[in-house]
Each structure stands twice: as C-alpha cells, then as structure tokens.
Image (cartoon, rainbow, N blue to C red):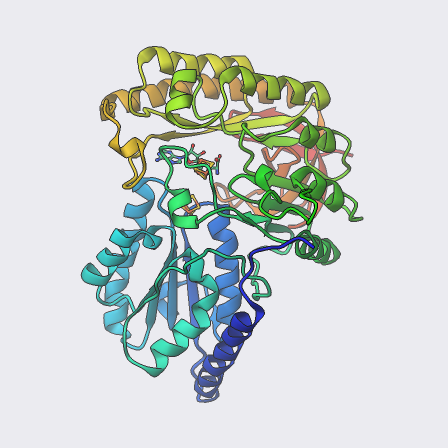
Length: 477
Ligand code: SAH
Ligand code: SF4
Ligand code: F3S
C-alpha cells in the first residue's frame, strides 16, 4: 500500500457539514427572493485556476450561484499569485477597488486566498491596510472555506486562517469547471526544488502526490463526460510518486501514470506541465512517443542558457544535459512542439551569460517562449544576491530576446501553411469576436470562420496563413 499524505476524511466531511449550514442560510435568503451570488477572481498559473475551480465548487455547495461580475456578488474570493511583483501589485490593486463595492453593500463578504497571502508579510498587510477584507486563507487551507464562511456569517469577526502544520492533499472536494471540454487535473502539489529566484516552495509547501487511483478515476470521468483536452498539473510533474513508494520502495512514477492514463478510451488529448529538466527522463519521452493520447507537445523551462547562471539558480542541470533531452525528444517525436520559460536579468547575469541564452534559443528553436524579467521575491536566496541588474538593462535584454524569438516563431509557423491540422474549437476569439479560435495538438492558436465548427468540437483545418502568434485556417474538405 502506498501512503499518500491526504487530509483525513473526517475533516473533509466536517467541511461538507459547514457547507450545508451555509446553504441553509442562503436558501432561506433565496426563498425571500434574494439569490446569493459568488464571484471568484483568479491570478497566476494553471494550478491556481484549478484551485479556483474547487473554490467555485465549494461556493456552489454552500448555495451560492456563480457569477461573472463582482458588482452583484454577495461573496467575492480573490485567489492571488506571488510569482512576480507585478502579479502581487495587480491583486492588491483590485482588492483596493473592492472597497467601494463593500461600502455600497456592507453584507458582502470579501475573502483573499492563494500564494500571495500565504506569505506572512502579505497576510499582515491585508489585515492592516485592507480592513474591509473579511477573511484570508493560504494554499494549505483551501478545503476549509465552508467553515471559514460559516464562522464569518455567524460571528462577526475577521478571520486570518493560520497555515496548516503540514500541507496535505484534499480529496473529495466539489469542483465547478470553467469549461466543458478542457480540464485541469492536479497530479501533485507543492515543490521541493527551491530554485533561488522562486517563491513557490515557500507558498505551496513540499511535494505531495495524489493517489494514481484518484487521478485515473478523475481523468476517466472527464473523458466519459466528453472532455477533449486534459492537462495534468504539478510544479514538477516528473517528481510524481516519489513521495509515495510502496512497501518495497518501488515508485509508480509520472511516466507510469501517463502510460496508465493513455489506456483510457476516447477522443482526447492528454497534456502535462511543468517538467523540470533535471528530472525529465528518457522513460517519459519513450512513453510519450508510443502513446495514443499524449499531445506531441513539451514545455521544458530552461530559464537561462548560461551554466554559471543555472548553477546560481540552483537548477541542477547544465545546458548540455538540457540539449541532450531536446535531441532525444526530437529523435523520438520529430514533430514535437517545444516551449520554454526564460528569466532575463537574474542577479549577476552578464552580457556573456545573456548571449548564451540567445545562443540556446537559436540552437533549440522553440515554438514559443514565456519570458520574464527577474523580479526579486522576499525570502528567496536570489533576493539576497548582489549584482542586481539595472531595470533598463533587463528591459533591453528582454526586447532582444523577444525580437529573436518572434522571428524563430514565425519561421516555425510558416511551413505549416498548406497542412491540415486537427484543432479544438474554443469559440469566439478573445482578440476578434468576429471569428472563432482554437488550438492545435501543439497548443498553437488557429483562427477560422465561425460556421466551420462548434465550440468544444475537434475540426480539421487547412492552414492558409501563418503569423508569429497565430495561424489561420479554412475547412479542410
Ligand atoms: N514549476 C515550474 C514553474 C513555475 S513558475 C517550473 O519549474 O518550471 C513559472 C515561471 O515563472 C518559471 O518557470 C520562471 O521562468 C518564472 N519565474 C519564477 N520566479 C520568478 C521570478 N522571481 N522572477 C521572474 N520570473 C520568475
Ligand atoms: Fe519554482 Fe523551481 Fe519549483 Fe518551478 S521547480 S516551482 S521554478 S522552485
Ligand atoms: Fe502559481 Fe503564482 Fe502560486 S505562479 S503556484 S499562483 S505563486
């Protein structure tokens, strides 16, 4: 028997009881003609989006109707991110704007959760500078939301939930998914890697895996319901299972999990993120190459092309190891779509280091890069390093990086013209509501006429035009 570190069932059922109690209160109000609405606002990564879907699910179980505008809400929950200063500023600014709403509607409850407020200094900042925020809970206490709301409704006191002694996996919580054809499935939570720039290990606790049975059941249910694109989530999915060996010390690792999930029948893609290059194994790539459902797409953050910087980042790989993984990947899956993350302006990054980053980008020729200007995070090792790079140098390097990548992305998209690609239709394009957009197996955006497909359906499109960030398609037959 593998031991998974989960929240004890009695604590989960206690929360179900709290949810029922809140629901009773809300149902009484609905009978009097006042339906109670909840609004959940999410910042940050897919992990936070997945958490927000659980938060929304709990809101529904408490008798709230989910809504898309804060103005009509009786309960607002802001799920925050701490990855860069900009993410925190945005969240704080929105929370600031809710002050007026609360003044015009004093019964409204406002809660703040997520990575930003899992940091003590931010929790205190909310306590002292945002007195109209009713409750705050960190990433270890999400499952406690019904109890917190019940407490707040029954005693008129602000609540600042302390972090749990141990960060555990909470199973059996309700979920209200945003989409009925794309879904997130967390396979593990937390991170043990402590890259020196990164706040995540401090705000998400240590790595813990969900049981493979729970994951297989969830993915099976999604495929059964007609979901077509399922992304498995974890900060470092390749650590999956390592915290839960069986009694003989054997692990059921991420590649094993993928192989098992791939056996689920249906017409769907399976994706995963994020892979850490130090743990991306050839076993994983082999499983991908012989799988039926795993999308031929791989996100492998390199962060820098300088070995000196990678060491200072505590990444535990060098560029030659990274390039070795890319070579093996392309040998096994020649048409794989490759993407990466890059940090520009890490402390002490010299011109030579930065040029090495441009070099690796030229060598690998990624389809897409998510690039970030380094942002010091309080409490991380890099924040204490000397040789901070001046803002204007960081910005100039960032621009050079974008210029190079944009030309590569276009060069990689142009040969797709004339090809027929299978695209999952997302409905109206965010940039141009006149047309539909969808994504390919490699997650590239394709725009096309609205009469070709229905939202949530796969459609075969002939690519007729390619730009840096989008392809344009027509009906293939
Ligand atoms: N677990 C994932 C990444 C999570 S954060 C991984 O290891 O790849 C997503 C990306 O944000 C990181 O890959 C990194 O490029 C960027 N990032 C993290 N901390 C940052 C910081 N302090 N400043 C700028 N970018 C950062
Ligand atoms: Fe952050 Fe590194 Fe963990 Fe990714 S692996 S979440 S970058 S500490
Ligand atoms: Fe994600 Fe931001 Fe937290 S990137 S893990 S929401 S710090």
